[in-house]
Length: 343
Length: 268
Image (tube, rainbow over all chains, first blue to last red; front, top):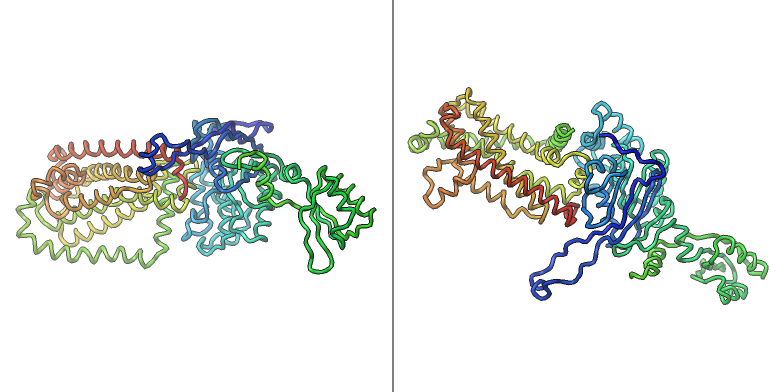
């Protein structure tokens, strides 16, 4: 089969007004009491999004928001009720076999590996399930192991791997077929912070940078949303609550947030700015000594923050350090959901 | 790609089984240990069973040996599909397979291939031991016997697919394969001919693919009859095979469509 050639300005993932509602299991008593039942809430409702080649898009939202359902619809594991979803131009329902040639997913956990086989044997198995010429298998397997940094552990039994190594092997498995679209569900969930950071760098450079994959990643981690994703889609109860780049969303929902280290957290100049509505004080914390960290939100981005800093210094407020801070992901999600009015 | 995929999955199961070395060796050893008491028991019962089994063979050892051999094939046909689907769904392995471009029949064949290969190895060993112990087999009838074997297998695979379909849809096989295996063992004519069954259960035995299959197989391999001489059993077997295979195929197809709609195809 020849792959459909998708122009660069066309999205590799296109979801239009997607809707999915799962049948709800009801007890006999409930059925007798309310034969028609109440309207079950949809897992996905009116979701539309596009992901382009080389782009990382994050799906954020609380549990039950519909992130995994959306990934599984794109992976052809779940059939949508309404709307359409295409991958590289193929419809996920009508052309599912073609979609499966374009995608790879890391949705399942490490139990989906053969623990009694070596990493290499696991990859050889999945290479045989892909439309790869048999002579290319060894090279692809070696490349995939090399890319995820497991070249030296190829002959080791997977059962002896750490959680991080297994996670990397799952990614290696996904990369075997050189997919154009990658679906990831919490890819760093079992990694320690250092390993997770290295893994994110690898994902960013290898998948989006070198391979030009379109990557859709469901995550709860703010580092992933900020470090990995070009854009994020905040979902709640199956609906898109907000969309945009993470810093832009943080700025629009929370204002830009800055920290100032000062000896006088209640300095009159700061009080005047807060009273005038030019800054909002979020938190004041002592560092245990004589310094205080004051977190403020400022509308208007870095220019407004620079002006505020100049005002404070001119007024004699002692400031040792002033920096922009990353807003907590939970707060961004909460504000996005609150603003969309569907809490 | 499908055959390559099925072989790769079978090889992975083989490598896994081989990695449990002691259990692997013991399962072969247990087969040899089992055949010795069967040999003595069959010889002891020969005077009493000779007349009863006359239509299907002359020696009771050969009669039991063929019954056991066919049952050894029937067990994976009934059990392995539901078991592979159930295990794969709970570990997430099945989900990972379904996202690949490999077709569902190839995936199922690959996931159950080892069980059938293992059954074949056991049956070969069983028959070899039987021949060493003096069982008289008409080997020239082997091609006809293989046709019967395939028909029995396909029929039971049909039932196995129904069980797999239930697992995919409702996460339970409703004990269908186990029930069918018990019925086949008790009523299918494995240890005694179905002619001795009480009238109340005899009609039930005729709905089991193993019953006409074993009758035809024994007459072919133990008595040397050609297929034309076992035509009535063969027709019955083929009818059952067609019915069960169609039901199994349709059930599985429906189950996957339902599971994709209900979202139950994913890991749980």
